[in-house]
Figure 1 (spheres, rainbow, N blue to C red):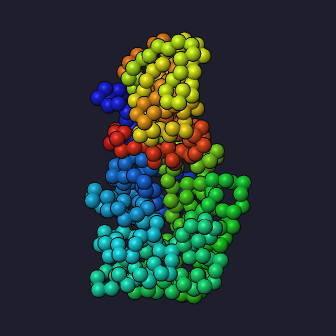
Figure 2 (figure 1 turned 90 degrees about the vertical axis):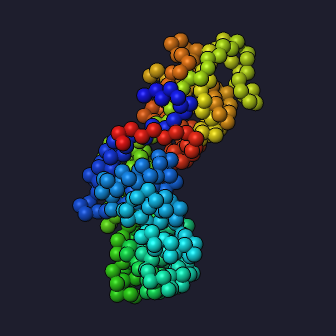
Figure 3 (figure 1 turned 135 degrees about the vertical axis):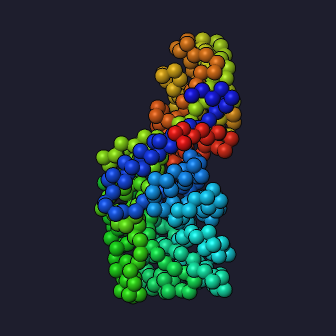
Amino acid sequence: MSYEDLRTWAEIDLARLDENYREIRRVLPEGCRFAGLCKANAYGHGIEAVGRRLEALGAEYIAVSCYSEALELRSAGIRSNILILAPSPAVLAPAIAELGCTQSIGDAAAAAAASERMKGTGRSLECHLKLETGMGRTGFDVMDSVELNAAAKALSLPGLEFTGVFTHFAVSDEPESDFTLRQFGRFNGALEQLEHITGKKPGIRHCANSGAVVNFRQTAMDMVRPGLLLYGLYPGAERGGMDLKPVMSVKTRVAELTQHRAGDTISYGRIYTCERDMRLAVIPIGYADGLHRSLSGRFSVSINGRRARQVGRICMDMCMIDVTELPDVRVGDVVTVFGDSPTADELGGRAGTIAYELLCAVSPRVARIYLNE
């Protein structure tokens, strides 16, 4: 599709999202729940559209980072279980309970403050206990007996209803590392201790992110939390026997064709000098659209089924590509910046970052066009 009225756009193929969801579920243990990650505007894909699709597909949970994302889903009419993964200010506890969402709790002070805020509301805040096993981020430290006892006390605080427990893996995208299984062992050990202290079952146990679904499927337990996999990209080189396809394709079009002589310099900073007479295409995508400036001169795009390298420094709203050897290129031709080819993984590698960052960086002014809606 050409979308002649758009300068730059992202095509979101929801049929591919469906296929990826089913492909991931195919490799999971029977009965394992699915928490689809929708944080950061569903990794740039659009939180409302993806949330609706996940609900229709039957995902048991939709996971977000913060209250505002949960509110956006509920405001869109999405009724699925929503898990807020990051800490929330205690003042929001009653509002989160009113939305019918689940809040992660990984700190004694946060648990006490949330419990205090729930007094007099006539409600309980559903929670999942967060355990720290080696990520070095949030959660009760399972290596510290004082912390583990504090976690046990949190489980009995009034106004808080704990229905699950989880941790987060640090290097599950590295199958050669034994650290993920060490974290998993710590997690299971902590669960045994908590059950011994409290006499209660922990509820839904989950720790497998995208990397673990690929490389450490034995950690699936009661639920998995795929993010990048859902959107058709892999967190590492391994594929885990799954055939996934990118859901997002970022496209633009040739806005102008320019002629240059050998020795001419191109764009800000004059970092590129034409080595011969050249024909360049100006495309209206730049760092304000999410195309990292660090990619300047380091990647190629796809146009009319062929690759064309980007030259000169990427500007705020546009950049230039070399079409000297592509005489059939015309103004208005569609250019794929990333999608099937080149992939977000390819561009991420050339930018010295990861595909996650490129997906999340696609700015709001880039229109999302939903296919197979």
